Image (cartoon, rainbow, N blue to C red):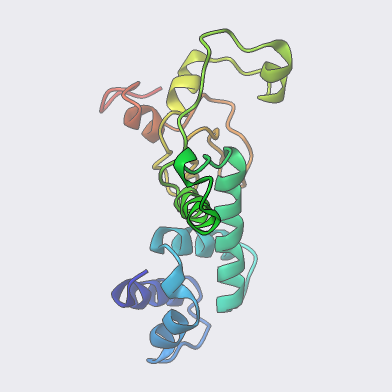
Length: 186
């Protein structure tokens, strides 16, 4: 997050929690104390999740929720191995590994799904909720742009309470995947 984004984010927090006192120096203090290491979209998503349960909010609670969001992204896919040529250079290998992890946590550079062309077995299908809806399979190849959901690549869409949708995906995600034309409704 940039300092300008921190100012806009604190204004957003003030709009979500109007009863909370925020000073003119709050954006600078929050930026220096941790927002500088956070993606602005992740911070906004964390605030949107916390506003449901919190009367007041602290920077620590926001950062904890951002960590949970990032951990959820990492849990969805294995971290790609660093290049094999770095195997004999432990420091460079570790640095490349951590760079991949940071990229995944931010929602970028997620590894592509490796497929053999074979149909998934029953155990896999059951673990995925038994859902082999071809529309859903195609839709989860792009992130969901609907703000309350924001499911990352490979994850199914959820409603405002975090429950999986009975539909294949949100209309916005279907459009983003090129599966629904503008103006059409599912």
